[in-house]
Image (cartoon, rainbow, N blue to C red; front, side, top):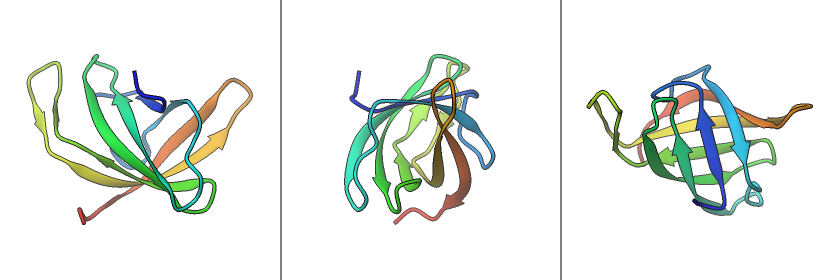
Length: 98
């Protein structure tokens, strides 16, 4: 398991999706390799770069869902917040791949 893990509540990412965060976020301007775990048990490796303490850009590598659907690499704007139970993330927007 990676030091940073994002657990999504669906089989893929999309604007509005929420999930839980496990591990420490990188400092602003720095990146961290992370694992993105999906509700069907599939996983993707990604890179998260923080921009202002609560927002970051998540780039995920390609992966295949449990149903066999191939999902290409994508890039997302993501917000982070602390709740009473655990840190959470919310996908805000899809970004063009750089």
